[in-house]
Image (cartoon, rainbow, N blue to C red; front, side, top):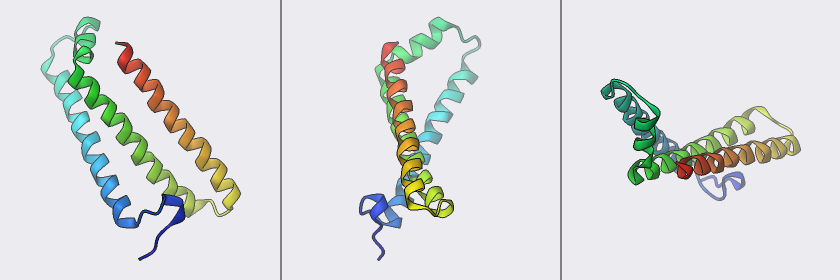
Length: 115
């Protein structure tokens, strides 16, 4: 079994399972939001705000944001290791792209809990 240092001592099976699990959670969230739009004839600010004032929706949204972060982190690692051969450039790109992903999650957290 190959243990890769870049993935914090995880193996390919764990990355595979993590990608599939996060994809399922993100798909469930998309189906939930689409179902909301399909069953609500007119979406106003009050209705939208009411949906996101529910604690269950906030938790589901936050879990989905975390899943997006994990999914993109694994995907970025795979793409960068395949296409960026210079280790220093790859490390710099990985750092900034992961920092950007974390910034998106933190921004989403502030927006989500600000409602």
